[in-house]
Structures are given as C-alpha cells and as structure tokens.
Amino acid sequence: MEGNLTISGSPDIRLPSNKLMWLSLLMIVAGVSGAIYAQWVGHHHAFANTREMPWGMLIGVYAYFAIISTGLCVLAAFSHAFGGNQMAPLANRMVWLSIISLLGAFMVIGLEIENPWRMPLGVILHPNVTSNIWWMGTLYGMAVGVMFLELYLIVTQRFSAAILLGVVGAVTEAFANSNLGSVFASLNSRPFWYGSQLPIFFLACAVLSGAAAVVLFTHYSHALHKRKMTVDTFKGLQTAGKIMVLMTFLVILATGWKFANAYCGTDEMIMAANSMVSGPLSTPFWLFEIGIGLVLPCLILVGSKLSSIHAMSTAALMVLVGQFFSRYNMVVSGQIVPADYGLVGVPQHFSYMPTTSEYLLVIAGLGVVGFGFVIGEKFLDKSFNESSDH
Image (cartoon, rainbow, N blue to C red; front, side, top):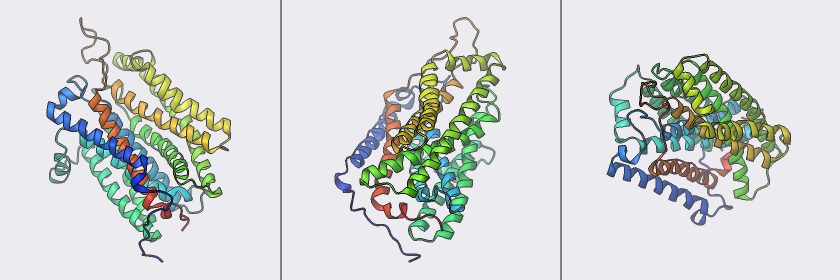
C-alpha cells in the first residue's frame, strides 16, 4: 500500500557473515588510518602534492566517483520519467548506486583536505557565489539530500513524488558535474585544461560510467543473491550496453579532438599532450584509458552483440577502470608542465608518484561504495526489483 515502509532484510544474504561487507569496512578503516597518519605527520609529508603540483590523484578520484554518481542519477531520472523504456527495471537500483558513489566521493575529498570540518561550515556560513568550487560542493550536497528523499519515496511507494524529485536530483547533479568540469576548464593558467570542452566531456563520461556501473552492479547483485536474471532486467542491461557502445565512441572522438586542439596550440599544450602520448603518462593513457577503458570494451560489446551478461559485465568493469585512469591522467597532465619550462635546469615534465597514504584514501572510497552496495542488497532488494514503470 502506498506510504508503507517496505525495508526488509533479504533472506538470501546473511549480513554478519558477508565477507564483502567486512572487506569493505576494512577498506574504510584503512583509508581513515591513512588520513589520521596524514593529519599526524602533515599532509605535505603524507601526500605527493607539491607547490608546483598542488592537485594529485585524490582530486581525480573524487571526480571519478562524483562523475559516476551523476551518470547513474541522470539515467535513473530518464528511466523513471519516461516510463515504459527497457531500463525502467534498473532505475531504483541506480538511485541507490548514485547515492553511494557520491558518498564515496565525499569520503575521499573529506579525508584528503586538512580541515574537513571547515568545508560544510564554509559552504553555509561563507558562500561565494562566484566560485565554481562552491557551486560544485553546494549542488552535490543538495543532490545527495534530494536522492535520499527520492529513495525514501520509492521505498514507501510514493512514485509520483519520487519521479519529480528524481528529475530535480538529475538536473542538480548535471549542473554540479558541469561545475566540476569548469573548476579545471576556467583556469587559463593551465592551457591543457582551459576551454569549454571539459564540462561537456565530464557529462559524456558520466553517462558512460553510469551505464557501466549499473551493468556491473546489477550482475554482481544477481550473483550475490544467486538469482536468475529476468528477461526484463536483461533487456535493461542490453540497453545500458548500447549506451556504453555509443558513449565509448563519443568519448574516443572527444579525446581525439582534445589532442588535435592541443597540438594546434601553445608549446605548453603540446608538452602536456606529449606527456600522455609519449611521456611519463603514456602507459596510463594508451594502455588503461584508451585500450582497456574505451577500445576493448567497445569491441567486446559489439562482438558479443550484447547477448552475454558476462561479456557486458567485463566490458563495464573495463570502462570503470579506464575512467579511473582518465581522471588521473586529466588531473596530472594539466599540471605536469613547469610554468618556467625552457629555462636551464628546469625539467620538461614534473614527476608525480602517489604515496601509500593517497592509495589508502582511494581504498576508503571504494570501501564506501562496496559497503553501500551490500547494505542496499540486504535492505532494499525488494524496492530494487519492483517495476519502475509507474
């Protein structure tokens, strides 16, 4: 009945003994330990950030989780708002996955900054409406609140209000995501970032990552429950697979034009592009971002004709791995060229190698997503498997 709360534990999963849950908690503890160590010895000692390269891997990881969240939220809103489409059976799960992905992003950025308690206070007490970073944080904070309320309405079967809030959440996340892109794109002192491409590129990557995430986690959900996949769910995953094929092609195209533009630009843009094409970032770029993250998934999906859930899940995992390296490459390549390059004794490229503490914080973000996934499968399984065509 509408308005009744229907959260219940799934009989197929024994939560206390679930190894994935405890592994996720251990990952979170490891990340928090890394953050405590950074507070103890100082962030300038614990992290590889320098005066010349103030942004490191953790900024890219924050963007990675936030972009996945945006893609899931947007796809869920389309699936809910336009009922009758094949992705409708996946929509409720996408809402929860979007929430936990954004919480993973908040975990990483919260542990990364030296005074995390100042962040929410500063956003509320000292708003700066001319700052892209302020808008990004504010909009993402609003989005997660809206999505929690949307999820509550889904669980209590108040679907009309949930659909409305889903659209609000998707619009909010899209604006937040484009603001995240503009944080980099508005820095004219970093020519490789500067321009209007990154905000739109981030949205394209969001749709790609969101489609990959829902394929991967839906497959893992059925494996966790040892449940046979329904025809409607499989058709929904096939639609997500088609989105992945389209978006891998578009992201490859956008990446190609980014480099074509760079090689027509200034010396600094050419040197930044060279750092990925043939320099210190060439392996993460060619092997992981392009090969594993874009080309191979597209070939697997097309070659399998979207008829195998294992092929789609493998391609989805490869996309998510590639997108991780894409965010890393983007953050590092924009800062890797010294501002005073060309002078005697100045290297052509800075060197950057993430520290153990930085890797631990990445593990914490993954732990939040893993823990949230298990909790969702335990307590929200009934809502995930209800029809979303209302």
